[in-house]
Amino acid sequence: MEHIVIIGNGISGVTAARHIRKLSDKKITIVSAETDYFFSRTALMYVYMGHMKFEHTQPYEDWFWKKNRINLKKGYVKHIETKSKTLHFTEGDTLEYDTLVIATGSKPNKFGWPGQDLDGVMGMYHKQDLDNLEKYAPNNKICKRAVIVGGGLIGIELAEMLHSRHIPVTFLVRETSFWDGVLPEGESAMINREIINNGIDLRLSNNLKEIVSDENGKVKSVIIQETGEEIACDVVGLTAGVSPNIDFIKDSGIETGRGVKVNRFLETNLPDIYAIGDCAEQHEAIDQRRPIEAVWYTGRMMGETLAQTICGNRIEYKPGHWFNSAKFIDIEYQTYGWVWAQPKDNEARFYWEHKDGNKCIHINYDKNTHEFIGINNFGIRMRHEFFDKILTEKRSVHYVLEHLADANFDPEFYKLHEKDIVSKFNQENSTNIQLKKKSWKRIFA
Ligand SMILES: Cc1cc2nc3c(=O)[nH]c(=O)nc-3n(C[C@H](O)[C@H](O)[C@H](O)COP(=O)(O)OP(=O)(O)OC[C@H]3O[C@@H](n4cnc5c(N)ncnc54)[C@H](O)[C@@H]3O)c2cc1C
Image (cartoon, rainbow, N blue to C red; front, top):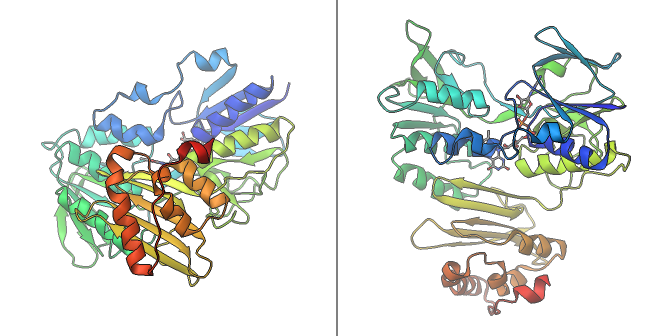
């Protein structure tokens, strides 16, 4: 019987396994060095914040795997021998496969900073990072200050986590404004304010020079590149982005770039070897998407797609329109379509911000055809289905504004702003767009 081996028990590997099982009787083994069972990585922060126990991040009961005949093997693969189709583990044992799926995810970036491997220095990615955080930052008596290096989605999550235990945080952000490579100026400034208003010591345009050790090999301070200032701390969180976790693959003959190179069918350069999730790098970007996308839902989609291919129905990976969501401390963020940090030549923007400074929408559209290109929502929720349909139908910005009531996720609350948004657009563009009444049923029936 064909043996499918999947390296990685994250969302992409586990989705592939579940769907292969639905479609076939093939023998399936999932390998992981991290944890015995699949857990939701995106929920790790809530464990530290006391909202849930680690067990609650595991969506499947422990018996699920045996019942579905999915073998689980704990171990770290140190080498893939592709000629003999054999995996070699650090413990010295081996495992043979007929078909191999590489789903090894990401690892936090380290840029060779002095002191980056000291005790008390950690990323915020793996379960082990959470364990380390519990060890070195259980409370504000043991951890008097933490320094976070790198402003992005994971950095701000870590800041919120530490803050929830009243641990003072210094947040070093290389950019002049938070995540300004991705967020336009208004949104980025809003998040700077949110960070500062939460009592976090935000240091923009500040780079880490060095992490200093105490006499026991534990971090005692960091030194800032620009000013030479030394900041005493007990924990350093390295959150300067992630990259594909593929170092062990480099000498196997499998083509790699930043990630494992795959085509639209998630096939590598070698037969019977595939890559999915954060570690996969598309040869050519799909639409305007990045060749590597470290996002939960795309991992799941790749797992589902690949299961079809492995079970005989070879299909292309088609992620559809870009969307993403996150939370910046108390401000919810959703993006549908494309709103770049800077508009492109053919693009026009409409920005509306509520007077309280913690809600905004930012619409990007084609300045000649008025076709809607994308929207950022901060502190306001709008429906994914609505914008997915709008993007597919190539509707205009005017259409979007007229139908804001249909986009609205939370009518009771959000209704208050629709008129205000449309009237600002009309003023700025000398238009006379009229809000239509909610027609959810008609549009989506
Ligand atoms: C704190 C945090 C919050 C996040 N929040 C969001 C969010 O809100 N929304 C969103 O879309 N995305 C979010 N992400 C990103 C999302 O979690 C990832 O995109 C997703 O988990 C990647 O899934 P994956 O299956 O590709 O890999 P992973 O989940 O990384 O799983 C890969 C597994 O492979 C194992 N492995 C690697 N190498 C080997 C080896 N050689 N041998 C054995 N095992 C190996 C790893 O240990 C790991 O268990 C977040 C990530 C983090 C860290």
